[in-house]
Image (cartoon, rainbow, N blue to C red; front, top):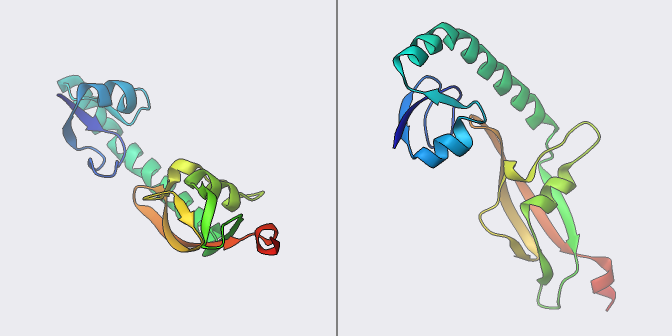
Length: 153
């Protein structure tokens, strides 16, 4: 285990400036290379104290940008898929499919921003959470309908 200072809010871990203990691999492979944290040494604590106001300001700008982006997010998305008579889909709807449906000219979202507890395998309505920032999220309604081709068979 290693002590680190968080440079941004990370859900289920902590807020900016907190010193947390994480596994070595998580710190080495994710937090440190992505500049989300620094090692908790005396020198780094002094550096962080000097940069804290700047980091908080950057975080607030990210939150504002994420809230603006949420305004462009549709409340409902309808996805058409081929399905059996009983309503089981041939294949499934994944977070990547949902991200592709949301994508427009001025708005793009990645599959990792969509929290889908399980792949959708049946026709129906599902509530999915979209997280654009650890402090900014919104639920959207996904409606999966039978495509016209499978209706005519």
